[in-house]
Amino acid sequence: MAMMRYPYFTPVPCLDGSAAPPPIELSVERTVRFDEVDALEIVWHGHYASYFEDARVALGERLGIGYRTLYHQQVPAPMKQLFVNFHHPLAFAERCRIIARLYWCESARMNMAYKILNAQDRTVATGFSVQMFTLKTGEYLARQPDFYAAFCQRWKQGQIPSCSSAGK
Image (cartoon, rainbow, N blue to C red; front, top):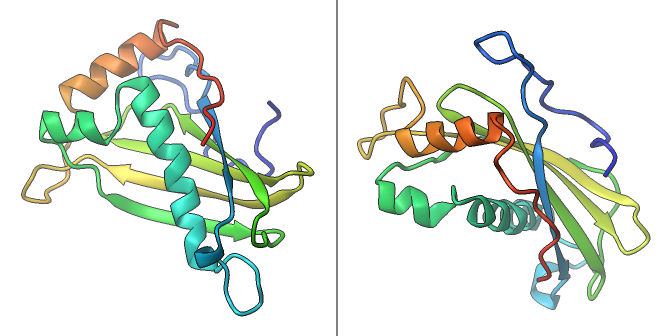
């Protein structure tokens, strides 16, 4: 897949000086529901965050770093930043594909970029999110939680299986 139209995260070398592993991505498909459109008969802008979430959840679950893992590890990862850049509207019953791309970062956070394409492969929206690992009290962690550090080590060693599209 080609790079996102607007690369929100640029590759940063690993702390040991080696090259960062390439981003990991997954796409999901969905159809715009009636309850998601506004009076103009296009998707209301607030629903795009939910579309990003569809792909983010699928990618996290596929990689073993999704919400269930966070819950079991008792490590919340609340949203710190969310950005959406709108390019073209989606309408009721239109099919679209949402791509989530996880970028390498050795901090206690997850950086994801998103791209939504309509059935004609036209870019509908791009964006990014940053989730910070915290304690249950809401304090930010200074380093990655152990389960995520282990995931990153496997990623760096090329042991993370490539993701494929997941229908939705």
